[in-house]
Amino acid sequence: MSYLQRINYRPNMDGLAQSEQDSLRGKFDPGSVDVIINGDTIRWDYIEEIEVAMAARQTGLAGWIVKNMVMKGDRYHVAFYFGREEAVLINLTLPAAQYVVNTAAYYLSKRVTYTGPDGIAATSEV
Image 1 (cartoon, rainbow, N blue to C red):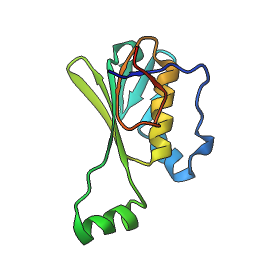
Image 2: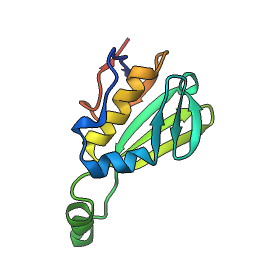
Image 3: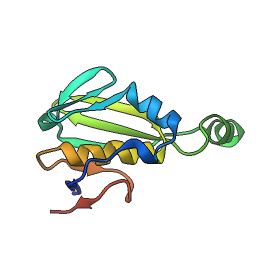
Image 4: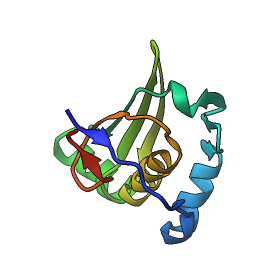
């Protein structure tokens, strides 16, 4: 089982495109005690798991058009699980997904299970 590894620096949005920054500002607002995701406030210490998944796309020409022309590449969903609930940020670019997960790694005060592609954030097995 993989756990999100804590980091000792606060990530910033400087490496994100302006459109990514604008999109995240309306959906993701981290603070020292809690995070606001899509308007819902969640305490960091309630979060038990973070999952990153590549957004599914239709196969064939329609899927290719959506992926490459509408979305301009692969997109990712980042889900935060707490208790019996979840909060999901959808259709993020890879840099935006990395920013979200690394921000969580900075603020989280306990071990949190991580599921998703390698390279999004540092993880540990212990």
